[in-house]
Image (cartoon, rainbow, N blue to C red):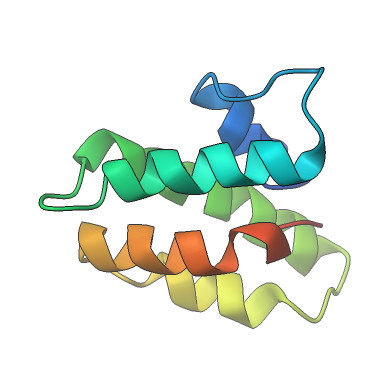
Length: 98
């Protein structure tokens, strides 16, 4: 899967949660609920790996253009525990944009 690293809706689209008729808040809510379902009681490794692929693209895009948010995405990429990664992705999801 190739992500452009533009914004969090890329994850929503990948997971099949994006509907053109939904507003951003609805898509955000559906995406967070999906991630929560794949976080507890056990982390879904495929979901976590997909998040990492998206974060690499987001980090690289921000780094290339000198965006201030680069260190936080780099730090999140260093999280090895899948449950922790998914948990903080839920918290930071709406801030994941270029």
